[in-house]
Image (spheres, rainbow over the protein chains, first blue to last red):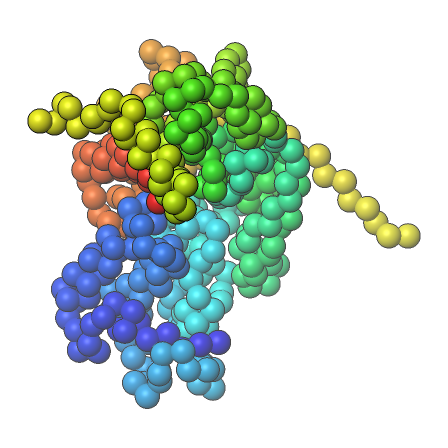
Length: 324
Length: 107
């Protein structure tokens, strides 16, 4: 496993005071918070920062970490020293704020122990949980996000997903199990909607039922379409003569191509509605809106230039009339 | 003989959750849910506690409040303000994305 330089992660020196560490953490936590940040790999960064703060804010943990010495480089191959006792006394880890799916690094676990009580902290965001109560207890609900394409949202259908689930085995060791689930996406689902998978969350204790798994849908951006609620927007380029004279053009929709009539005298920015061609919804499906955009062909040849010149001469048109 | 395991998973889309189920899903107490309602973080269907029903949007907002409180030490009114603003930003971003796509076609 790789050595983690927690000071480097927080951008503080090894002699930083508790206040400096707290300030550095707060700044980075805001910067990388997955709910707030638009940075790439925000979540990964955020976990690293949290892990570093978890160690450095606690004098006991910081001291144990210090005992490893300062000769280590970030990313260097790391083995705990023989007879390592740094982990002693870190059983009470119930206040970790790591998320359900995916805890701290192996490096962290190797230093601060792999005992059973330790891992109770990895089970959730640490709200009032009591580990190992001797009665039937329902497992915790889990929450995860799944990303689907707009096509999948439109058509619905089966999807196989893989979820990393931290699980504590009989020996109290934690493993990241990969759980494979085949789920059915209902047609017309939109971002932010949830699927509840009964009893697919954390296992229960002492014969209690498993918790539920909540999957939040996230629809990936599409090359052509933009989604607004259940309505779909498409930019449709047309030629100046199609706009001026009217035309029947073929337009793609998620359900297949359709014919669309362009009225004579159409303009850029006009919005045409294809009723019911958006995402399926009850009782009324969404619409597809087509935004017209007139593209002008360049005048490359003499002949083409002559045609434009003829238009300039014969069509009285001042597009800047309202400006002056 | 190889053992074949068959699992039947019950999938529910956009479940309507009771107070108890929300508490279970987010690991929070009913009192805290009441506080969230009082501060306008969520606005469940139903006028009294025993008929309150929560949807996906509520769950999402509760999770965000919890994350902000725990990770950034934001207090409840601050967290509610932050998630309101975040949602406004998300709406604006969706509109910007639409307009950008429209402008890109012309280039």
